Amino acid sequence: MNYKPVVGLEVHVELATESKMFCSCSAKYFGKKPNTYTCPVCLGLPGALPVPNQRAIDWCIKIALALNCKIQEFSKFDRKNYFYPDLAKGYQISQYDKPFGLNGSIEVTSSNGQKRVIRIRRVHMEEDTGKLTHATVSGKRVSLIDFNRSGVPLVEIVTEPDFQNATEVKNYLESLQQVVRYLGVSNADMEKGEMRLEPNISLQEVNISELPKYKVEVKNINSFRFVEKAINFEVERQKEILDAGKTPTQETRGWDELSNTTISQREKEDAHDYRYFPEPDIPPIVTDISKIEELKNDLPEMPKKKMKRFTNDYLLSNYDTEILIRERSLAEFFEKTVADGKEFNLTPKQIANFIINRKIDIDKNLPGEIVKRIIASNQKVTIDEDKLKKVAKSVLSNNSKAVEDYKKGKTQVLGFLIGQVKRELGNVETESIKNVLVELMDKDVE
Ligand code: ZN
Ligand code: MN
Image (cartoon, rainbow, N blue to C red; front, side, top):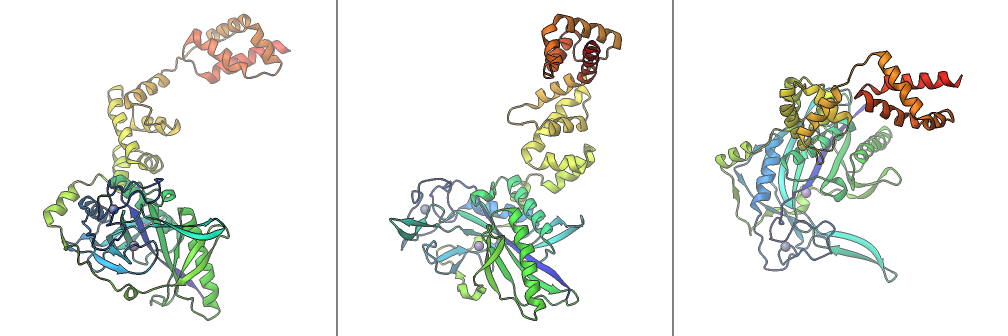
């Protein structure tokens, strides 16, 4: 039987706000002493009331706008009920039927290099949970809970099952990470758990339009490389089950990076298992059109648009542009250098080459300095062969020790000798000095 993968993605992104989602505790909990960033609200103590963080809501809407979503003027929070020790209240404040953003899209590059559009189903706001650690204390297996993360603003971005291979998923995740970084709303650092991924994977028979009746969700994936591996593993695993005439179980599986396989964790719950209902402690959120416009106008130029402008206006290759716009700060540094280099007739291409080839650290250089360095490196003195030979000869006779060393095989003295010639002649091309020196010394040997 012939199958094609049907893959959807849920991504959670932690926002980099100062304070948590529903209380004034600091949200900068990473690496801090456990349970020091807490209060009655984020510990879920009875009677404590949540107050929504407006900045987090604005940032969530910005993400939704950047992903071409329709922003909902009327939105609300809901309780998602489930029991787990890291969830102090016994429910998570999330959004159910009125999320901030609906029906967006993003373009990805597929494995054959073609562009495809992935539909974004929804972008909603919720709170993070505490963190469980399993350890052995005094010879006993225990579970420890740290509530510092409890209540940190979390944005969930859910796609339709539109991905057809792992390459598209990886490309989507890279774009999404770039988008939230451009917006300045999250670092989306996977290693710190600021971006967490859950693909759901099933297989569909190629000639049947009906979607599969099951899906398998994979959790615990903490790198883009592992998401590719997990998807490819699931495709093979499910193919075998289907070929045997069975249907894979609808379940949640975990990625195990030691064995490079997925392992069954639990059967997947449906939405009705969570008993969603409107959060009674928070009034609905109304975002009027003028506010939405204001947030839209506040968006920076996004990567896809920048890509187009750089290749058109600066006549750069896609390859160069991709490197330059990977981070917004580098793109801005490049453009400042182009502006500074204009009066010296430096082309954007020269500047791009210099920044990329020399891996310029933009925190340690100023655009004006880069312009000076490019001009200096362009001013190669052209010199006639005879003069070069004459100077090389005199340098060799004045440095007989270095010449001896060279003859003993210490070729590293060449650098010193080249430097001596340059002192006389200026910035002559290194390669031709080297050739002349080597030629003279080798002749000497014979
Ligand atoms: Zn708190
Ligand atoms: Mn969620």
